[in-house]
Image 1 (cartoon, rainbow, N blue to C red):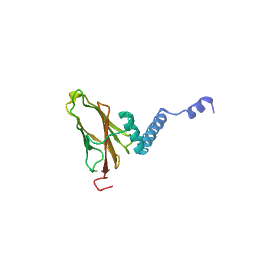
Image 2 (spheres, helix red, strand yellow):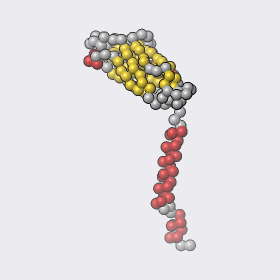
Image 3 (cartoon, one colour):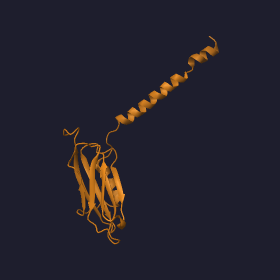
Image 4 (cartoon, one colour):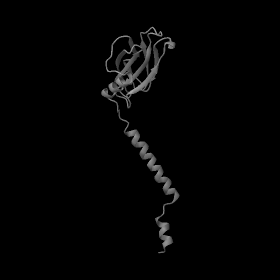
Length: 161
C-alpha cells in the first residue's frame, strides 16, 4: 500500500468530525441536566443570608412573608414581602433579601430600597425545586436585621408530595 492510501484511510472525513462534535455536545448537555440536584442546604442558605445582611443576629417582627402554604406548581410561586417601616430619611428599609434552602442556588433575589420607595413591599414569583423553607430578611437603616421564614410544600402535579 502506498503512503498516500494509508494517509487517506487514517483521516477522518468532515462528516465524521461533525458527528463526533455533535455527540460531545449532547453528552455535555445531558450531563448538566441529569446532575441538576439541589445544591443548596439550610446551612448554605443561612450563610448566604448572614453574608448579605452582615449579621447572624436577627430580630423577629416587622417583616411579613406572604406565600402559599402549598404550591401546586413549583415553577412559579408568588410571594410578597412587607416590612413595617415609615420609609423616612431617618428610618427606612435598606434591603430585602430572599433565599431558599433546597433550590439549586440559595439566593433568590435582593431588593435595594430608599426612602423614595414610599413603602417597604416587594412582590415577585420564584421557582421552588421541592418542599423547602423560604427565608426573607430586611436590613434596616439603623443596622438592625429582621428575619422570617416559611415552609412551602411543593406538590407534583397538584397531587401532594
